[in-house]
Length: 124
Picture 1: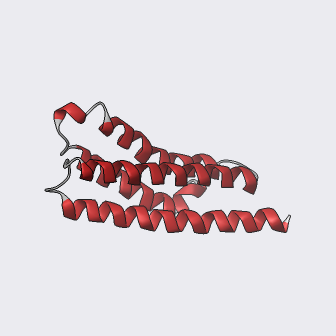
Picture 2: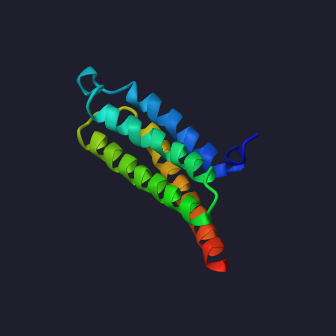
């Protein structure tokens, strides 16, 4: 087992990716290579950057990747809001609410992880 596999935030971010992929299957065909592609990339970036950061030695480097993961998470949130605005997810409202809950949970956990890493940096 790798260290990142012990991070609850990584598991929640993976659950979010699964939820997002399910939502993307509901999009109109003409959006599969436009907005869908952007959403897919942002979603996958969150757990990927958590893993990449965890593989770094210094807390400062780790914190940098947590910040990138957070940025991708906010990008994902924005893109899902746009998809709702465009009417692509009207019938899937309960799934959008669940995705937003996972985004909020991931955001709080990333903030906590960042603070923890920041404290390690200050303690040195």
